[in-house]
Amino acid sequence: MDKADTRNVESSTQRAPRVLIVCEHASFRFGGEASLPLHYFTRLRRRGIETWMVTHERTRDEIAHACATDLDRIVFVKDNAFNRLCWRLESRLPSMVSHFTIGYASRLATQLEARRIARDIIRRHKVTILHQPIPVSPREPSFLYDMGCPVVIGPMNGNMTYPEAFQPSGAFSGMNAVKINLARAAAQIAHRVVPGKLRGAALLHANERTRAALPQGSKGEMVAMHENAVDLAVWQCGDIASDAGKRHFVFMGRLIGLKNVDIAILALARMKSGDDVTLEIIGSGPEEDACKALVADLGLGERVIFSGWLPQAQCADRVRGARALLLPSVRECGGAVVLEAMACGTPAVATRWGGPSDYIDETCGILVEPTSREAMIAGFAAAMERLANDAQYRDTLARSARQRIVDHFDWDKRIDSMMLVYQRHQATAAVH
Image 1: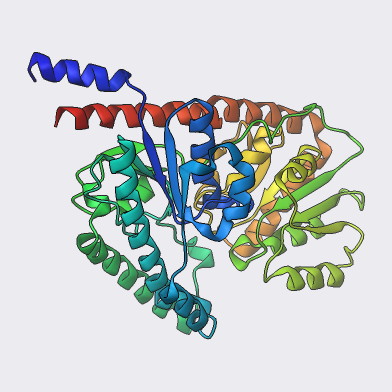
Image 2: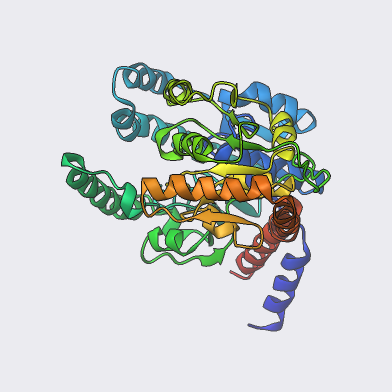
């Protein structure tokens, strides 16, 4: 590298990036991965970073409220006639079939339009970095290549399977294995046809299992970075000292099969600590009626509260007053609710599988081995028993949990790390 190139690198590293965020959707209300683009956009703008965003119009009203002063920096992708036709056809098919067929065709059309809009923004506003934070799946191909500036993708998280004891059984087990293998082979082919992840400047991955699912032959820098972070302004920590008279647990999330909410209910029924121990279930979903029926069958009607969906601020209040968050999920890539609880000074009891095992160790929570369904119920019951009766142990975990979030999962620190990635690749592009 000659002296002129060196000066270009130094200048580009010091110059603030001009960032374009392109995402399928953006919403704090949807939660999960949908919240990630909005976190990046709003926090970069608070720092005065020149930032734009391209996203679908489905959450326009929410975004208009959250980003009122920056609405002119956001371009919404509208549904066209093809999207509307796909939506009508999707409603007539099983959800899994429609997702991978007609639904995929509709998403493809939306992504191509987002690509066209993005290229125009990059040219007009002299964007120096394009960031695609979602979809977080490492197998989803990216159409964002040859965009005129470096492309940063992620952090991605995925490549999850079920624990052996929870694998589909019987006639469906062989079909499931074939389906997974075909999907993985199809993903590798798709990445060759749509080479965004092969050509990306930086591919951010949450863990090694995710990195293993990225397309073979990717040329970009591989950067290890957790998918999730926590807004400490929302998930605030109260008085860590637990109330000895309030033995209360909380579950937060969609009520779907893989979350295994019934295991938390059965663990509560198995506890020997007395009928003052309670469980609040925050969320809704297709398993809600079955969970309510189980509560009735076990005679736990006065000890299990179904609160439905609640805004984040209310969720934080409920979690802050709990002995622990319970997450008996067996296929959780991320598990942001674990981090949110820890930020509130509330330890988590979770399955030692997937995302939660990336966040929790014995100093800040309890992980239960998913060796069998019975072992899960017994493990959660034992953890809840100890946390309900040993306030000092619970509070020790709580303090460590809060500190772990402050040290490693604060959104402001995440933006610091992302800025370094932006600037590094902005500098490299300046040389070439």
